[in-house]
Structure formats: structure tokens, C-alpha cells
Length: 463
Image (tube, rainbow, N blue to C red; front, top):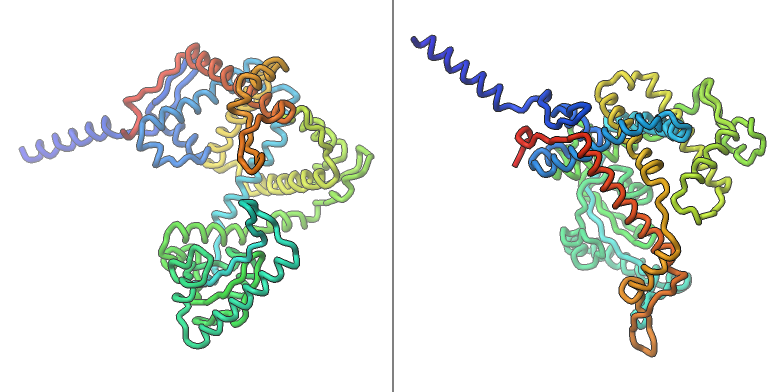
């Protein structure tokens, strides 16, 4: 009898567990050509770096995100039906997006995985701010170089007087509360722990040169501020122990990310030293299309490739009236970015990143989002124009309400209408975005309707 009771209880438990538990294979959205499971939704949230735990607390948030997810899937399907994914424009864009995504993912992974053994310091400081302006008749007026120097000299003397008070046995905490211009004055100047790269090289050099309990005997001028720095404690931490030392968990995480970022710095420079890598970015001004600007393995990037990129950017430029020239400095910046991305992309493939399940989930989501976004931008929004009459009508209708500025006239502040020529471009931009937003909403509503999209609310989590 007892055995049967135990067996019955076990069966009830299994049934309750089966029906009460939310599984990753549960379907939470249906549409004509497919479904979305809970697991796919989780992967999508993670790939887009949405805070999964927060979103799963409320059904309304899940519905909003699921609508966006399904819209991207359906828009990508529409793009493929129209053959847009095979178009020259999209294939060129995709050739830029792929190394960018792979390289960015690898860099983030290397940063997060970076191990370290780092010295951190618990610091207090007194900060005196040097104002490089004065207020005259409610107007901020920039000081001359000579005037700024006089303020600097005055603040330096003030700082030296504070140091003298410290030398006479004054409390650093009390003096910080009395004199400091920093928000930390309320805590007696205590800014907690810092790593060597958190406050800039000059501040770090001064702070980490001190012994426990010491303060800087000379004021430290950095930018528009003058500091007196005290070292309260030094500790050595690793990625595993940092949260045990830094009590504030948010600050500990922020510090750990900063240290890890610093450890992963220079990976591109290291990769650029490979025997089969060539950097000729300085030849950017060459007129010869065959000139090689950089080479990674068998992949050579030439002046012709750069010219093709510039033509593409010009074609996609949002502000068609902007005729600013892409000069050699901008070209160099573009090339350096491409060079670094391609170096990281090759390393990502070498390390087998494309075999990693988490990466592939993110990549699939990125592919859909990219195709969907480009299709909506290039095809759906194509042909949307704003006429000169529409711009003028908008200005005439709202100039007294929306297109005004305050101006001093005879000692009084009056509201004046801005000239049409000054706001014409802004109005055109606003009206264009308004039309695009309206068309996008109509298109998305129709896409949901014809695909019979249904979100199964009973399967959503939270309230």
C-alpha cells in the first residue's frame, strides 16, 4: 500500500512538472511559414544583448520583443523572395558586415576571457577645479590664456596650503569635505578602488607611486583640475578575487571589465606582425587602382577596393546635400578599421569561432537582422520624398511655435522666428522620417496580418 502511495505521488509530481514547467521547445509564436520556440527567443534576446531576466518578468515586454523578432524574420523572408539578398548592393554590404561582426565578437570574447593579476589602489582625493571662463551679464566668456594661468596659480597655492594643513596633522577626510570640488567630498574624498588605467596615466602615476597612508606632497595638475591624492590601501586582485576586495559589486564588475579591456588591447597590433601581413595604408593617396593598401594572407585590399567603398558610402549617404569630400585622413581611418576587422576575422576563423554554438546563434540572428534592416532601408523606404511645397507649408504652419529662438532685444528676451533658409533642411529631415515611420508601420501591420502571426500569451512568462 505504502509503495503504491509513493508511486502515485511520483506520477503526480511528474505530471505537474511536465505541465507546469516552461520548456525551451515550447512554441510561443506561430505564423504561416513557421514558429518561434522559447529557446529561439532566448537565443535572440541574448544575441541582441537584451537583459533576459528583466524581460521575462513581464509578458508585455516579451510581446514587444517577440513582435520585433518575428518582424525581422518575416522581413528577411520578404527580402529573399524579392531576391534582394543576392543584389549587388546587399552582397557588398554583407562583405563589410561579416568581418565586422566576427572581429567584434572575438574581441569581446577575448576581453571577457582575459585573466589578470592586477594591483588596485584605494584612493582619496581633494580636487580643485580650474574655471577657464567667467560669467558676465548671464553670458559665459572664455578667459584668455594669461587669465587662466592666474587662476591655475591661485588654485595651486590653495592646494599647497591644504597640503600644509595635512602636514600639521589635519584630517584628509575633513579637508576634502571642506575644500574639494568633486562629488566625493561628501565621502571625505574617498573614491574607492581604482586600477592603473581607470583615471588616466598622470593620475595613476601619482597614485601608484605612493605608499599606504601617503599623499602627494606637491599638487598634481591634470587638465582643468588640480589634485591632492592619498593612497589608503593597495591590493593585488585577479578576475576571481576582485569582488571579494571591492565591496560594491557594480564597481567591481566595471573595474574588471576595464582591466580585461586593457589586457586585450593591442591584439590587432600583435596580429599585424604576422609574416604574411603587409600594411601599406600610408599609400592611400595613390591614384593607381592596383596599389595594395594592405594584405592579409592572400587577401589584398587595393586602391580600387577603397574607391568602390567610397562610391558605396556616397550612394547610401542619408544627407544627399552633404557634399563633403572624403580626404586622405578619413580614408586612413577607414582603412585602419577595415584592416583591424579583417585581422580579427581571420583569427576568429583560425580559432574555430564559427564552430562555437553561442557564436553561431548570435550570427544567425545578426544575419536576419542585417538583411531585414537593409531591405527595409533600401527597398521599403525607396521613393519616399518630401516636396519643397510640403517643407514650406510645414514652416508656415508652425514657424511661430516650433521654429523660434530667444534673442536679446533692447535688454529684453524676445522670441523670434528663425529664417526659413536656416530650418529648411531640418524640416525636410523631420517630414521624411515621419513618412518613413508611417509607411513602415503600415507595412509591418500588413506583414503580421497576411502571415497570420499569433503570440501564444499563455506560454509567456512573468506577469
